[in-house]
Length: 137
Image (cartoon, rainbow, N blue to C red; front, side):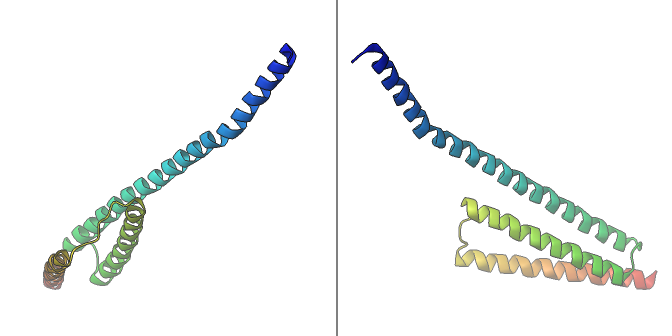
């Protein structure tokens, strides 16, 4: 075999290796780009959820000091609460896809139900107190 034949064979071998290995690097880059986009979406959801919580807190404060009528307050609060629920569902979906969330045990469900009942009672009591304060004022 001549020197030219050996060089040609090495060049073809190098081109073949590049042709085989190159897609592996491209897929890794694409995956990391997709991961960073997913992370950005997740962070945006978290920021928007904080904004929703702050808005609900502000609505509660405005209602307590009498800046909002009861009907307007209830309508706005329901709207923002629904947005919060939708965002939490989206965040849970992200967490489930990533494998972050473990299924809750049955005793955890009972604890969660008790906490939910306590929260609902506190919200109802607060609404009664706010409505009574507006009626007196």
